[in-house]
Length: 91
Image 1: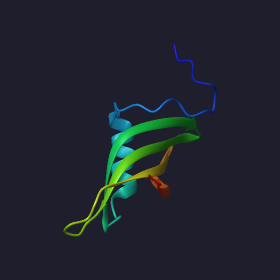
Image 2: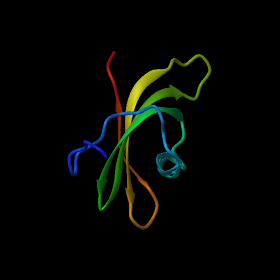
Image 3: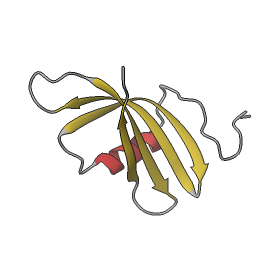
């Protein structure tokens, strides 16, 4: 049984399940210029699912450096996943 509060995000986990992976891939399908690699995810069940991905990001040019980002995705009950926010984390 989960200790997650109703409507709240659960804890981040590095075990990214197939549904979360599919939502991430769907939302990022046409996003170019930066490669985002999910490291961990937290989810929130609403009328669909909100995902918050902690990612390593890298601009797709030679010599670029990896930097941490948060990528938020909403997957409605019906229809494709939607990218809702990308935020670079300060180190």
